[in-house]
Length: 150
Image 1 (cartoon, rainbow, N blue to C red):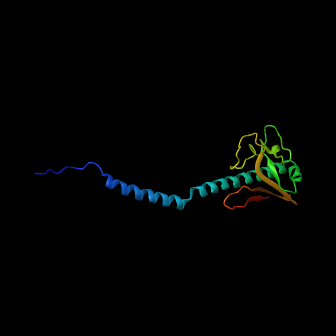
Image 2 (spheres, rainbow, N blue to C red):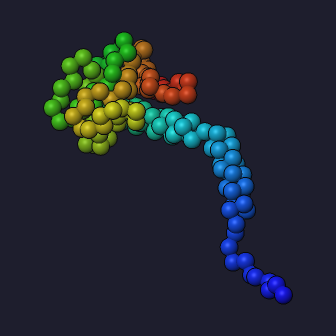
Image 3 (spheres, rainbow, N blue to C red):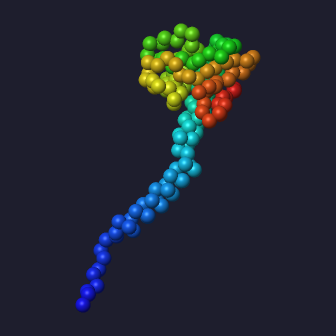
């Protein structure tokens, strides 16, 4: 007489199809969600915040200091200097006067390879047109145009 044995585990024949279906579903979900695009959007959001902080700091500084910084702005697009340690801003637009009171430090583009304090390149640009100025982030991803005009 045969005794009924209780099964306490799954067989390999039961586990393999379940794992196959689960891995296929995971691949479909990950390809639909596109996490690289999400990270690019997050970096773009950070860029939008950075250029808003830069523009607002320049406006506040200019209101308190006779608009002197506004009149120093270039009429051709020029990169904003981010070197607060050595002050080496040759060929870059220096906004170090706003550091401390109006802004903690000059933001650096999130895709920059060197986010240290000695990196003089912020990868944010500024240009003046008449009484207005525009701060832009040319390294924006996913075809976005990120700029703010004040």
